[in-house]
Image 1: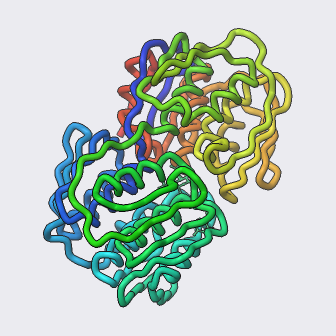
Image 2: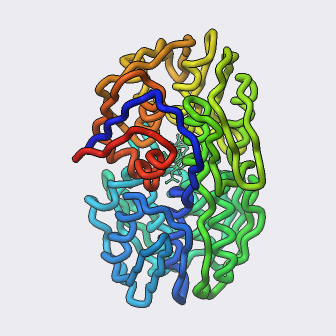
Image 3: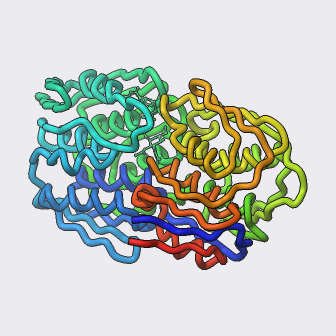
Length: 416
Ligand code: EPU
């Protein structure tokens, strides 16, 4: 599938942000830990969620998903090895590792998939599961983990990994005793996970800080919860607003979650209006100052926004620098942006962006989710028509992408 965009249209009106993909991808597997029915509201209707639903059904769960509400009944959950064809579709499939281990004391799984943006090892998760009493047998990309019963433990993560933090919380929540997790990731998605589990009866403190404590409990009950707004979707549309917006309002957001991005925009000289749960932004008609960006864990500048923000750096007058510290290989958007008229050089984990330039339409390809989003941002600002092939990558993470953009005046069509 591809998307065709006629660029340089002014976008005006309101874009409502959906629930966070990366939160929902954790909450849904976690629902299997509950001893009752779980209702999750504000689940984005993106293709990754569809894959997760397939995995739940494969494991014997009854799942309904309508109007962004997912209801999960895990009464008939069975412990089966998830086929590699499903688990290699996304990174989040490895949340089933601690879930099934906690429920059945045994799990067999393949190495998870996900965007090809670096090696993305899972050593920190395996370390945490071992400390909590798991016995890991590894054979190539296949893992068999067994336990005589998980027990609390003291875990230090070598880096504040989002996935390893979620996996440690999952394994600890019904383990016997207290788990202390140090150097935990502080992303809002972690807070969403802990709040969700606490509403089921878990005892977790410190989520959102680098030390999380989890006192194991015997039982978790059914509950209702909501997914937080998607800060990466919000950030991407805010960037689009800065490129081609006229009073473009990005609503249903938690402004604090995109503060690192918005303050960078302020450094560039861009003006915007922040309200309770929205930000309104207009593309400036004056020179923008170049900036330096370095990606970091939350509350630092999100790695998932570095590719989407790159086209905006191309609009600054002078040399901007962007350093990617989380992934080894997250510049697959750059050659395509250069084809569209950008002047960017890659040097190791840093790019040097020379501006200002005018983007022109071209035929390009989305190599992964956020690289695709980056091309989309450039295409919306480009003179002429751009075709982005492999748009499926973008649809993994942006709910109702075409509809939301059309509603504010974009000329965009999905083509099969
Ligand atoms: N890492 C290890 N060992 C581990 C775990 C991570 O070396 O055991 C490394 C990774 O290789 C990477 C870094 O630590 O270099 C950070 O990885 P992290 O575990 O934090 O990432 P993740 O949990 O795999 C989630 C999001 C990503 C997002 C990162 C931000 C999900 C499903 N994915 O990935 O989202 O970039 O956090 O840290 O929540 C996206 O949405 O486009 C996306 C890639």
